[in-house]
Image (cartoon, rainbow, N blue to C red; front, side):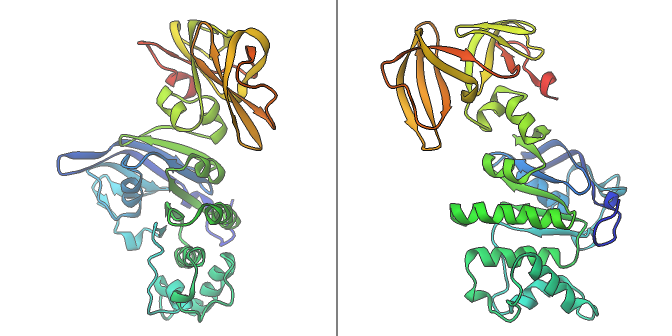
Length: 358
């Protein structure tokens, strides 16, 4: 398979293996493993300080790892005694700040990384601006651009040299919410249109799920789980991941391997541990119906859906999500039922569900 630029797409895959990096006595990356298939977009998701930006800079060659490897297809960029400098990696990078040159026009900003005597210089600049929706902006000064336009120019500048890999480090963090939502969909469209391989760093779970073909969750300098967004949401490897990537109930129970017996009834689980467990149940998988096992204590109404806070007579407070307007109110007596496919359970003081979601 080939990209639209004619390069073999196999040349664009990225492999990070056992990457480690410390600053002084502080370890930042601790044996990171990450795979980005050719032509795919992987969202790197994690809280501030978990090592996301350092990993991106190591892939770009802006940081020299202490150990481990970075490969683009069959080329070793870092490791095994090799270290390819950033300018020879054929990797484009977009930072949080657009970092445009204020004294240059839009066209000269976009063409900054291209050889001056390249006969295709002007065409490449025009193509990059067309891709980001800014045709006709060539002679504009950067001071006349909005925040969203400035980031589009920064993306065009990274795309103009036709890099084999694109790295984006929270490029929309300074923009307001509506513009962020618009641009992240546009960026996904752009990268898909050119069959790009890309790593997109974010701390926003919604953004990661919307942008990424796969999501890699980072914590304390490691990638702790990687997979399609739906798998991470439904089958998080650990309790910490379940909490980080969405609203979750953790219902106590007793597991027998395939079923966990809980205060809301038996819940099917995938390869769950034996003995005391906490069952991860998303609120939309809990159905509240009139009954006599629990009491609705509060209702959170969001317009498109609503969440009941339900206090079990013998058990914890459980969140139940319904589509549309709520039909129950505080004080109503209800039963709770689990719906949908098997979920995951985490052992209490025992093994976690890592083996299930790996």
